[in-house]
Length: 497
Ligand code: BES
Ligand code: ZN
Ligand code: ZN
Image 1 (cartoon, rainbow, N blue to C red):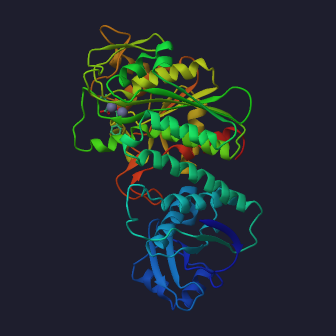
Image 2 (cartoon, protein in one colour; image 1 turned 120 degrees about the vertical axis):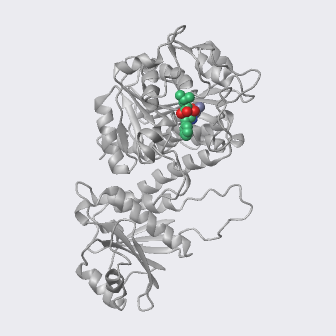
Image 3 (tube, rainbow, N blue to C red; image 1 turned 45 degrees about the vertical axis):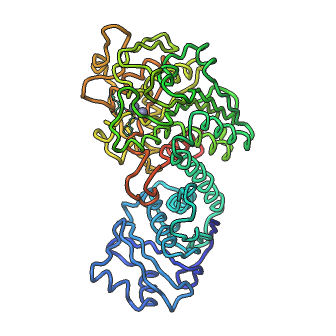
């Protein structure tokens, strides 16, 4: 899909489909003119309340009198309430409407919208993301493409005045970032039997091979033993697939790194504390944190961000077997801290304990971990937010801002020390579950000591990694969540936006 930037009007627009941003309650002069060209079908539809211009509203019309033969109106709400993510969503809806009708060349004025405190370049990038992300399909395992609809070919972004310079670059950035997100979605969508810890390591290696400045090291069982990583080894014991720790470093500059830690449980059966079979298939997405970290590194390298990143992925398959770790076992982690395992399904925190401590030994400026950690996350914040906890006010405030811009919104939960009582063990330094209360917070409370003194943020993506229904630019399935969030956060830190 090629994206081009041109100065032009509705009347001169080319392609198969013209996607027009429709604000709520008010038709501008160019929209009224377009309405007349369409035989006033738009104003008639508004009168009949078929469309009001609210976000999510769409109206499709055929347009025999225009050079484009099809017009789609996409509601964007009140112009004064417009956000960057609403723009991205409108672009996503336009792209999907075109694809579903087999129309491959789209012209749109969506990128010509104004959003407060937002540059035209950011808007163009968001529109490009909306187009690339919404039309994703994972068809590797289909012997024939299901709907046979061709992919979009050309997107023309229309500007009423001469567009500022640099917008082609912004569209290209949107493409680079989207490519990384789609890679993360692909990794997550694979059946777990084809995306084992070893497969994840191979994916990381092949990403690095095709890029300068990215180096990957994989620590296998022997190295994990030498480092005394009892958490990763313990969880990995039940599976015939050996566990590993994948370390991917991007060196965009010298100096202290930012460490990104991603939970990479390639399949979570729950282990001996086995999960119910209904819905267990979805636990192939329990490596979404690791996928997000690898994809962030890929995009940072492609964008040549002047930053040093170390991605750390503890990769295991959580299985019950005669060799598996059991409830009541005590694991000794790399930090020396011992954990009484009262539920083998709370495995993410056990592997993250080692990975966070390992990250801390590298003395980074900041550690951010990304993990599908707790089912309770959907109870706490639902599927519209990532739950965030941590020890760095500065980083959490910046992530909040990046979340609002990218639409990958975060919501903070507290890590008050009173919660620490919930994981006191009778026989070890802590236990891996609390009572039924505050499940997501308990996950954060458990992880906190393993980051040591390094400023740290924990992102629980359990409720956002997978979507049960189509969202404006995330088709049903794996979301590739947190990649754009982390990139936007890093760019802001570097003063790049
Ligand atoms: N991978 C799951 C969390 C999860 C559940 C993610 C549902 C997405 C959807 C995690 O390893 C887990 O099983 N957590 C347990 C923790 C509990 C035993 C304290 C949970 O949430 O039930
Ligand atoms: Zn689990
Ligand atoms: Zn899990």
